[in-house]
Length: 56
Image 1 (cartoon, rainbow, N blue to C red):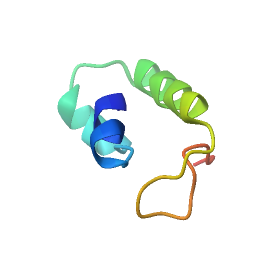
Image 2 (image 1 turned 45 degrees about the vertical axis):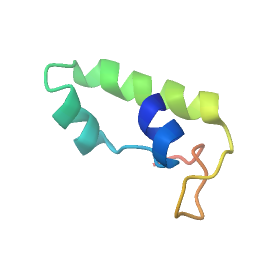
Image 3 (image 1 turned 180 degrees about the vertical axis):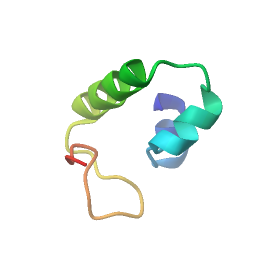
């Protein structure tokens, strides 16, 4: 997630992450995505009016 965000300004969605990490535990993925958004805080997501800190 970090590499994609740094390179493109875009946060990958769950589908993209599952393609990259097909054997990851669903709970671990959800936890990692939440932690990533906490770290980014209110940084805007490229091409969106929503920040990284949105509750989906």
